[in-house]
Structures are given as structure tokens and as C-alpha cells.
Length: 253
Image 1 (cartoon, rainbow, N blue to C red):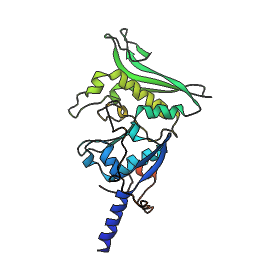
Image 2 (tube, one colour; image 1 turned 120 degrees about the vertical axis):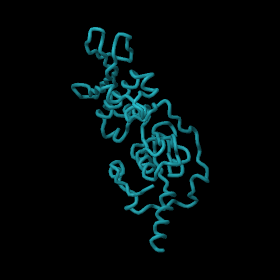
Image 3 (cartoon, rainbow, N blue to C red; image 1 turned 135 degrees about the horizontal axis):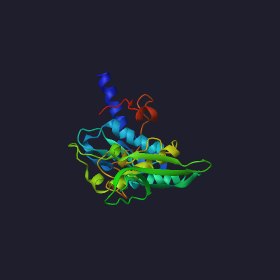
Image 4 (cartoon, rainbow, N blue to C red; image 1 turned 120 degrees about the horizontal axis):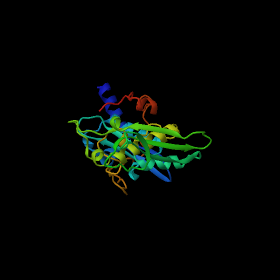
């Protein structure tokens, strides 16, 4: 009985956990109930406690506001959840870095002469073959830009049957350029962009623009159940950010 009561108390603490933090100029408040009720794209009822906690910790540690499309938790069926960061969050974070001096990005094609060509933008002619994307991020006092060059074959999104999904088949140049840009930004500012990946990088099957989390939601008292301060979980229950991101979080679904 004592063991059962202890487990029930631990479960109650997980459900009542409320995280409050700053994201830009906004005060953000998250709890497992808020995340499951409002912030899961897909099958919210199938998301696990571990996946919810990983999402909450990423938002808190990277100061991301999921209500402003800066972070998404995507869950379909029994597949592991995907946690992705909105493109705007990458750009805002980079713009806040004093050493950031802009970027250039484009695509890599094999032209009509059979030569590799690095092109700014996303224009691909009918006689050309798209093979990748590239991006340069300019950092103050760096002699050369931080460059990322990525292969289309490595990142192109596919369905379970192996065919290319709708986003990648319709806008492959736009998608691969975005992948290259996100990678270059992360390599240029690793401390500021740790653990942040765009939807196009992780083959979520959807793009940043498609995910539409609720906007202007004010959680009701029924959602945030903390008429008195939420209890602090014991240290053993709330692992470090590094442990959670490496899959060593102790809570199970």
C-alpha cells in the first residue's frame, strides 16, 4: 500500500507540474495538461509523459513560446513524437546574437552542361537537376562564413511506402534550402540553438508553415489547477536538460 501511495503521489506531482519562464517579452506558463490539451499536433491522447516533459524542458531552456509557433510537439500513432522548432524562432535567436551579420542561402543543381552550380534562391530550370542546398552564415570577426551544404537525397521526406511526401514533391528547392540554412545557423551559434531542429530536418512529413498550434489561448482555471503553488518534484524525478534530451528521463507513459 505504501508503494502504491508513493507512485500515486509521484503521478500527481507530474500532472500538477507548472513551468513558468520568459520567452522574449512574454511570460509563458506550461504544464503537462496545457501541452496535451492545446499544443500537440496530431494524436494528443497518445503522447507520453516523457515526450511532454522533453517538449516542456526544450521550451523552458531555449525560451521558446509554443503559442507563437516557436516550437511544436508532433505525434502520430504509436511512432515517437517529433519536437521541432519554428523557422521564425531560429531567425529571432540569430538576430539577437551580437555577432550575427546575416546569411545567404540557395540550392545546388546539376546544370545543362552536367556541372554543379551553387545558386542563390530556389530557381530550378526544367533542364536542371536539383541535388542539394547550401547556406552561408556571416559571423563577426570570422575570416570565412559558416557554410552548410546538404544533400537532397539525405533529407527528402518520404512516406511509409517510400514515395516522396507532398511537401517535398511540391517544393523540394524551398525545403532543402531551409534545411541548409537551419544547419548553418546552428553550427554558427551552437550555444544559442542547442536542441533546436526545424520540421524539414527531421522528416516530420509536414513543414513549418503547415503546423497551426492554437493562437491567443488563455488557459482557464480548469486547465491550470494551481489554486495553491504547484509542489516542486524531487530532484530524482526532474532530470537535467541534458539527461532528458539524451533519452534518460525517468518518467514513463
